[in-house]
Length: 220
Image (cartoon, rainbow, N blue to C red; front, side):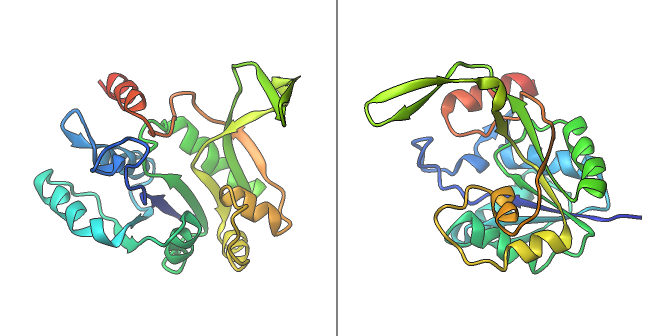
């Protein structure tokens, strides 16, 4: 039977939100946002290995939240690095699953169907990301000019991004560079083809106060 390791990255410091408290710890219905995210993956597979990357200076605060909220879901906390690349690379050393999912901690609205679809697809495709269509018109900016582009040719990428373990480990043997956009991009650089599956539109990355209000309404 295939096993899964789940890496949940929560290295944000709250700068975009304009708050002192990192967004992953902000409350939705009186519970930290990050707890909803972890629950989604625990409900997907009670036996999955869950690894949470956190800034070292916020580890004690998270442990305090765990106690105050009586949060029982087992997970391993590992220190995050300077960039997301370094956080994931640190977590990979602990992963023991046949397949690895990497998910943004501030995407608590990923639904069970998206996770399940990724889990099924990765077993045959080996490198899979969930995507959704672009609903807005798009223009390509070049200097001071712009040109309309065909939005049907583009997709918005979400997480969890899912990979066969050996593929992701090999990809992270590559040196860090500032052009790395996500795990799929790094895997693609290593020569592996990326496949896409349908994501869910609610699976937004919480980066603003408006996003937080949206998430709160949906979770109600």
